[in-house]
Length: 216
Image (tube, rainbow, N blue to C red; front, top):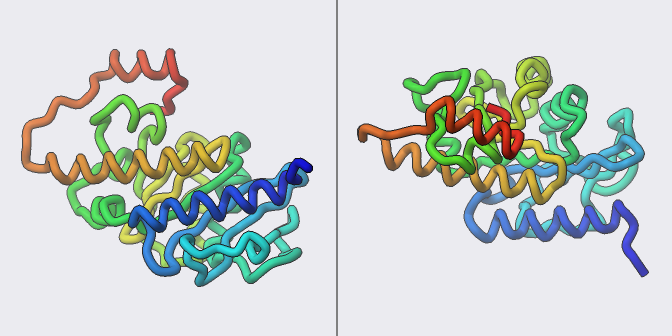
């Protein structure tokens, strides 16, 4: 018998969360994942839960109004997730990590807050797009919603200052691929600091827009 939408997504969150954890992209109980359901509700990873040891049955199920329907208490980052879903209609999943290299970039003083990472590779342009920096807010601060709402309409990914990346996608798999690409690009950026670099120019970026719909 085919799994229901919710059951399938619970299994997918569990499997991809474990993959991210096993490869060191999130540590301890840090990071969170959400997926939008067709009825307007969401599945979200619980608060203080390790992405490497999720129980599909205990993943939080929220109604369209944000109330908890079943499962454990959801991540305290609900305001962050909801703000993106409300303004970015194509977003069906969101991944927020505290991945090492992305966090390292988020604390640098000499980055452009409108576009933290330069266009180093075509895949960073295609899968991540232009990455703005969101000012620092404590984790779970509801004020982050307004800051992210202003950016999420035109950006699939943002970087929270001194905190980490938040990436949306039209599926959970797409969001995971994008956050992995972001982390790889952040590592490459740090490895290249101090070196004269050749980044993609505007005609090359426009070519990626035309062929792949890159948001840069």
